[in-house]
Length: 146
Image 1 (cartoon, rainbow, N blue to C red):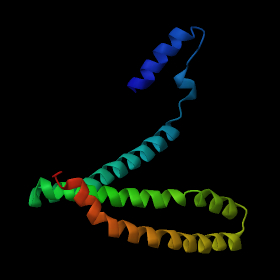
Image 2: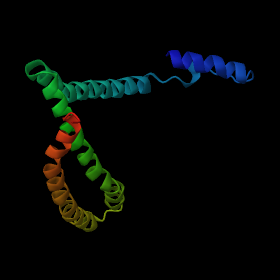
Image 3: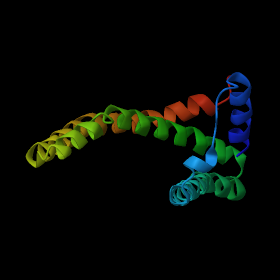
Image 4: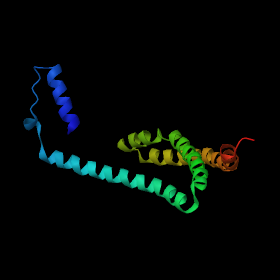
């Protein structure tokens, strides 16, 4: 609301001939729909905040900050690896949507089969590499320099 008020004031100053009539364009049903959608998004964001931070709170409480720092480094490594793999397959979603919209179910199934095969070929060796290098990486990051 504050942003709306500030934008309105600046719009009036920049464009004095501009006539903004909120009553004419106000639709209560759409406002209710936006508020319902926004509240669901906020609940989702708060839930994600809780889910992705509770592990760190528990580890620091029960095991201390040294264990938390080891966990956080390893967790970031795993998260970055997951994000890298996921980013490779992001273009598949619009392609599948386009095929689905054009009612090409056979091609959608073929796309999923092929993408699963490629995902397996890329992901399995990459995950083994991350697993093998995780311990040396954490040790290199956490061990003091001699």
